[in-house]
Image (cartoon, rainbow, N blue to C red; front, side, top):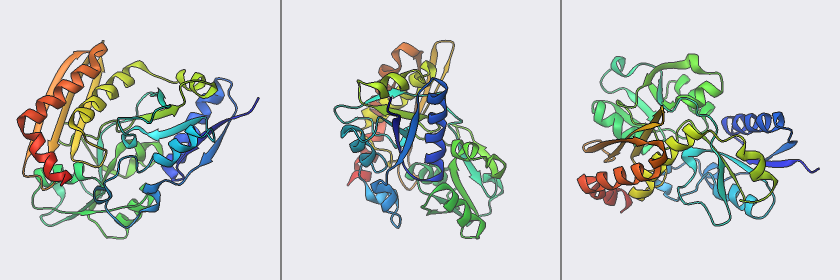
Length: 300
């Protein structure tokens, strides 16, 4: 039997994720091999992601490999995956999530002096940092996770903000100065979760479906429904975070102006079975309370 081909980006973190999925599928009896694919986002390194603007920066070429039959399974960071998948592809599994929160490296937020330089590649993080600490200098930092950490160590920044999940997966949790709770910095939609994308039929889907975890899928379904209602991609100042406990889902979401001057926050709660409806309703609520005006300025 032919091994399943797992498509992945070539970064250290992406390969960690692909190898993790490979081990899970192997434990279920599936032979696999990993195929590295360079995406548009990997090729554009000198420009802040928010200025590039296109959806699917880190997924398009990988999805093309799936559609053309060159790969059976694709592993993404779920926060990179647009809410609308191409025809012919499905989200076969969302495995159990790692820590969804953001983390500061360098110094805790309260210990950063006025004028300290903080690096982030995310408009969402930058906007919330500016709201929390208008006295900080927030600058763009691009590159893979290890590249950003090196830039911090070289003294280019006083602190940088990264996803806690990536640091923990790569064994760098001891570098974390502070983990920012969702009520302080609302995470990106799907942050900390993996997306396993396949064609809807065939061996890839059947194998991957066994890795799906219902509570995680419900949480990210709600978060992605917020994003879909807002019409946003992964590079806009939108955050959403859902928690599932005993069949109930709690959801918070924010939309911020890039300069941090305006921040619209909302929350919702309901049954996990209603995850998509809860998310869509919360997104529509945010739009009605000023998010539409903020997003129009970002997109123009």
